[in-house]
Length: 134
Image (cartoon, rainbow, N blue to C red; front, top):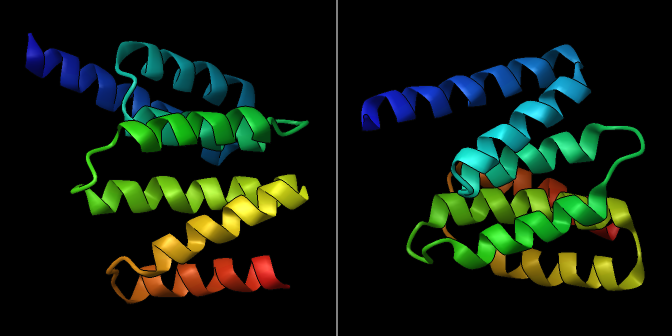
């Protein structure tokens, strides 16, 4: 049923986060892929992109493409999810460090900075701006 599916997704999300926290990146990548296969939503994209960005070598181009795809499919009214995707996408693009990547990151950040956010969100955005400008 739906409840068991939700529990299964939540369990995969938790296991992925634990694997990331413990530094078991191979397991985290596997679990994040399983989660995305079951439900290719924004949460799955965020988890998989984080795992891709932390493996060695980081697979940032793949992570950025995944986040762009997820961003395009999110309801524009879901400001929180959109902001989460954009913040992680900006970080991935900044780490790629090509001129086009940094320009895309700056454009996204300009859009993100115009969205409402709490104090923590504003601090994260300031840190992103400083990282891009620094």
